[in-house]
Length: 491
Ligand code: NG6
Ligand code: CA
Image (cartoon, rainbow, N blue to C red):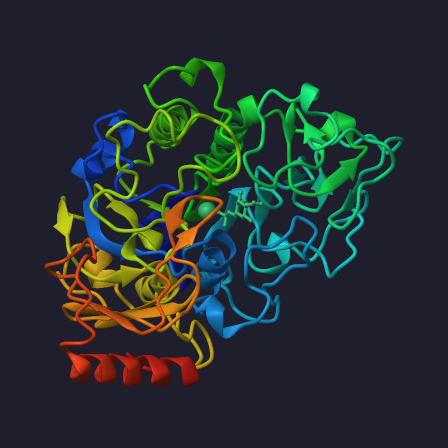
């Protein structure tokens, strides 16, 4: 292709924006059946796009889901990809091609705004100096991050390689093993708290909320939870503006609706459900603001906007925020059993909306797709060849994502405390002895002494374990799972 042809091709290529919510469940949005909270912006995105009923995060917690999505490799293949502390080293290998790296190679400007939680640096990170390797070393051109989670220190933003607003005279120190100096903690000084922990979360106090991990210093750089959604929206807006000549790829990872749930005052009382419901309203507002930024530059038609979540829902995740008491009849996982941390469908079956006015016909899709598939799907879309070791667990489901096919993958592995495999009408959960109920979150883990078998096509709530009556099915699915565990299987 000559130069002019290459330019024309670049112009025709749509932008890609992934809005990746935290801990949003299958039943948390209006377009997925919720009535106690209104989500007009997400509902509109779904109405004008494709709403998926069987889309999955790769894992039932954050770090492994994000790892799998960005690498196209199941996180459970690799040690050290569980929920990370805020001082963990970067777990993505800059030597390997990532989803954003592939997009960049295809001519996209790439950016990440929001929650990272994949580690930074190489260990013993000094937050007062250049912070690397990080997103810029694994394929992003621009980054504005919350380093780990809202409930983990350090409670500061990182832009590209540096903490934003840091005063060198007040250096940051972080420790996940022991208190630093005589700073107040949630444990010693509950009188200083505006939100109290229900389990864990009793260490450093920032903005009246105690967190996981200890930190001192960096006072001028500390975030204000109430302003976080606005801050992320503004940064996303800046990235869109700077990239408007396109094409660009924006990975926008919201903090909502993870704990601590401290939405802006304007969302307080928007729902009857307290902070958890109000955080959903704030999330929906965020989606509307991103769409406004696209609209302002005339980019709505030719941008693929996707919305999904990193894992299923949890009600009490460690703070006394009234989420349990005020839940009412709202069912965060909809008809699904379990939620975050669970082997049941509630752990990984999450909302997925794909919207692209210029390129897809609206509808509802029952195709089986996983977020680890985005990498290979967009590689095929952008005409990028992958080597055999790249995105090894990722399947090209682009025809399903664009509504051109009603089928996606044949089977998928779900990862929580154990592995499960879904194929056809059935789901097998490996034997995983242990407590049936997580005492902290009071939710079902999916543990069982023996493998469990459910016919999820008819029994979406996984109510009837068929393992005793269908030993052949158990054997067939166990054998398939065993093979996948040995190494990636071509699809
Ligand atoms: C848990 C935290 C929980 C949440 C989770 C990670 C405690 C007691 N619980 O360890 O509050 O932070 O980790 O959530 O500390 S995730 O969505 O980022 O995976
Ligand atoms: Ca999460």
